[in-house]
Image (cartoon, rainbow, N blue to C red; front, side, top):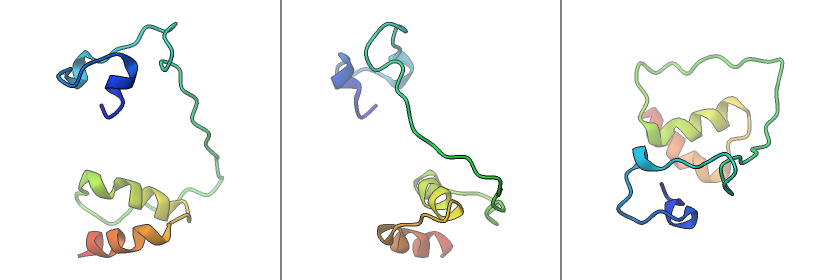
Length: 77
């Protein structure tokens, strides 16, 4: 939703209404990723707030950034 205006939608467009034709620019973005044979253990949280999802993923990948230290500390509270 943060980029909807860049894709030709206005600020009042709801998330459910944002759809792009396959031929339209931005509809087939490629995200680089890496695969590993090591599957990390699942976090020991019964529930996890969405803002902490990126922190959990970075931590599981062993790529936690310094900027995520405080967020991880708050998450563990």
